Image (tube, rainbow, N blue to C red; front, top):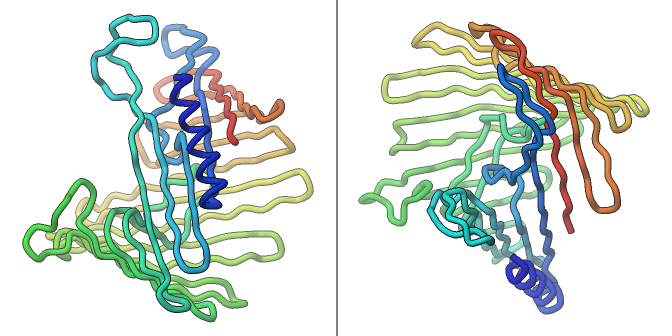
Length: 327
């Protein structure tokens, strides 16, 4: 492990000095001090390898004409091997590459993009992954932007595919966006499976005297026809040290005539917070989490500790924690 850290540090120093690259690295450990769900357990700590938004190493380089970026994660490799103590284990960690991108701008306002790409209408800012208003894949893209207007076009073969099957493009995505004093409006179309599976929608966001909000409205079509509609609402604001944010997704499935509606509300005051989350009010059995907690830091080490009450056919109680150092 010391050798890996040394290599990462050396690469960061060389890249920063030679290529003027921006290098960031982060180590995060997640755990629980106490957990009760019928039985009691305590003092768990581990690295959350599935945390897609939290790479081990992220870097980017760019100027006015070209650039590149990449991210590297650690994952649970699931393979039997030896740990640092020489013990046999199947819970080893492996370093894996991910999300690499290269771009260049042959003329002003036009950018050609190769590799990992993603864009969406608007992204909620509580969990940072729950909006379904976009896409992410590997392929080829074009971005053009001028005077508040932009267009993104993507063509790709989809995740895990090295070649396109015949002449069919696995994933096609296009986004139009225009921003002015009235706010920002956007429209998106994502087509998969040779245009047999479609997702399309419009979004709007704006700031109103310290209140930020957005609305996304989406429709889905598959081989059987119009499948479902989805609406997403997000708003946040603050008054002095008091802040709040709310996320409300709504889904109506046309085939089953069933609806889903959720809500996540978070209140903050200085370093303290109260998070209330229900993925679907209409679900049976009723399920909700109520989590008061606090965040803070000591030097470069950030920490978070909370008490989570998970309600579903009873109440489970846990005390989750996480520790983060990034540089």
